[in-house]
Image (cartoon, helix red, strand yellow):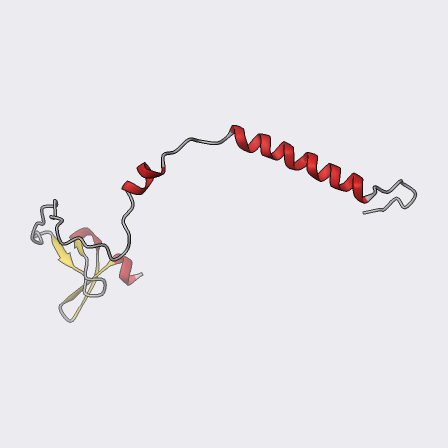
Amino acid sequence: MATDYDSPRKTDEDINEDSLQELQARRVDKGTSTIDVDPDEVAEGMELPGADLSGEELAVRVLPRQADEFTCGRCFLVHHRSQLAEEHNGQFVCKECAA
């Protein structure tokens, strides 16, 4: 990139004025995109790690492993038989763990 050394240079005052004008322009732009959010509403849905959940009840019905499912011997997840990749010494391995 070529530099024109003959062009007039800005003084410190000019640079400060430009910067101030840019900051004010940014401030105006930032204010127009502000969304009014109630912090209490946001905090209601958040749970802290280690929170006491002893009073909570599980609302999910757990079913036993079905006849067309298997438990992977590596990840210990229950998969459908279509996800079976291989069997080693009576242990089934799913496609994700075999990859």
